[in-house]
Image (cartoon, rainbow, N blue to C red; front, top):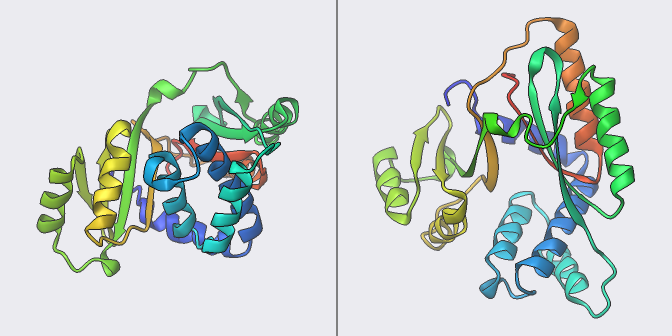
Length: 243
């Protein structure tokens, strides 16, 4: 995984997010709503999915009262919010693979916006499954070295004992990978052990990376990614462009 520092991306994203907190909180609010409705209620003690989204919200500096308000709203009688999860797959410049996960209350609007983002970057939306086979779904937990007093071997032995699959040391951080089904349990055990996590989520990790050298290709894929990130319906974007 060297050369693809997730921690560097997190720091870059957090800087960008500071200027767009409202948009990030809107997306997290949708995730909280879906977690309450589909994960088993408003009590995080009995809803591991909600517990994981709350941790993600806190990592993005969402205030506790905002988190609570979103949970209460989703759990309220007659809550009208109903979001459908739809995944789009497609190609960017030079065969780069892009996966877009959305939560939407209007399928037509979302489909149109996603298609537009691909088209404006000279890419195209493909059929379901056209690129997802190029990715592995994994639970991914990032621990910044500056937040961790343990040495690499000690942390590695601890998280492997918790059920993690793999442990990677990078320049500024440690990356812990789990099977998707084990992610919630490993994250909770790390939280209980007092380990500060910079990020923790189930993600799609590319098996291979595509390098772009043409300036136009780089501008085009950046245009697509920027348009997707700006869309409130888009929750996550995964790609194999070697930035």
